[in-house]
Length: 389
Image (cartoon, rainbow, N blue to C red; front, top):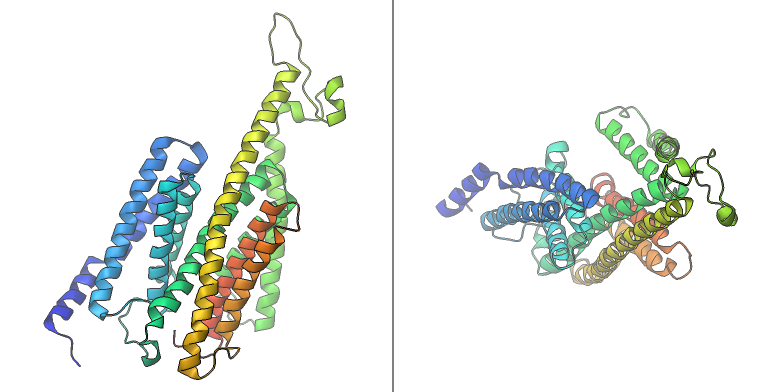
């Protein structure tokens, strides 16, 4: 079968326009504008970020539509198409949430998702390339449009939740001085450094066992460095009235709040009570920010959990009439279930722990890592019935 003239022209236009790269560039600006809007709380920064995210998503969807026309099928049948399509689903959800529920963190999360996901074809072109490929016969089914889209869309929402969780962890680590939050951030930095070194070929001669040992070492080193770095930054950022040299006001001694001694009178200065009240207002403000982050990540996590569960069930239905059994312990099936189980544990964990928001953020990070393992290691390094996709 040879493509028609219209199809060939559509493919040429698709290649010449390269809309996905323009979209990626706009996502980069959206990401940094999202950080600025989140840090400053300026209204104009949020609206600028929304405009950039809308433009990036429009270019993104246009690229998908052009590829869909060329292939004459929904573009979700290989790694490149799954990444591009799922990213569009995630950024669309982030845009809608930010428009109707202005928290600014959705703007940041959407920019982060688009920025890093669409950079993958440039970073690892051997694994993620935009070649136009024929579709495996087993994928020529209505379930491709339902099961596959639900699964990859849930992975995009998981990534959004991961971004929000890190916002929570950063505030918790810096302002609340949480050891767990600092260690979690450090572990991610160590893991990312290990993967970058692996990409540069530093572990090519390593056996799998040695590579796992190196990864554990990187994670442990990242934790230690993060704990030291946050401790140093916190010590330099500590106000004078919280230092050991500050005097203790008698009425606040029981609360253990050291405050700076000031001389009252015409000389002016800040009253101990005013310093204490300022600290209380600051703490209340930080607590409000953390509550907002926790609420935002819960909305995303619940959405991802439901979508992933329905996708797994529909996948079992598809497997039943395609392979003759609904479940066969295929690696892809097992790790998709493992990812869902982490979020099921997360939801129930909130009923039994006191620091619910903190552990929700930590488990969100762990779930994201398991999801990435499912998407990359299982697809490319473990042989299974899903190896073609």
